[in-house]
Length: 195
Image 1 (cartoon, rainbow, N blue to C red):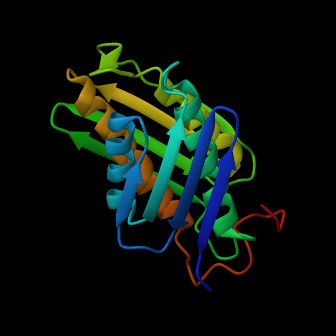
Image 2 (image 1 turned 90 degrees about the vertical axis):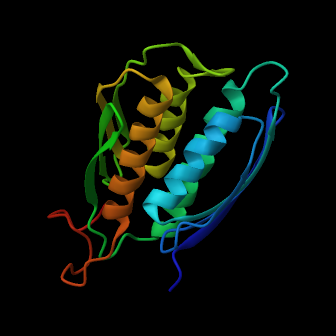
């Protein structure tokens, strides 16, 4: 059975359509008013081997907050929907990824209990025109809507672009590991019998 989802979210602030395949090849087509976030989501798709398409519009004349937050909501909803009852998934994933001088670790637990630990301090507030503080809102929204426990820790770095890349690549690889099906797992990986 294909583990895919399509999410549409239309509010007074944003209009987003997102499709996701958990068992993809890393293909993507992403368009939003946030070019640097688009780049990070392209990395997410490629390094997580997710097929991802996004068509997003938002009130960027105000700022990018609503668009970034709602993209996190939609991606989280898509992961949750595509996972179905989570039968056979590994549940946990972890990855540490370097990007030149930067190093980040991401850990994901698809537990059904949302929580975000975000220990990321960038060396600057922006990359180009993008406010880097918005990434925490993205991951918070994702965590809540994917019903996932997500920890992202940036160990070090000197270039904000590299630091962001390390975080997104680590997140992609950890999520890819967590959603993977292991044929040895009967039902779900929990002594409770439910996630």
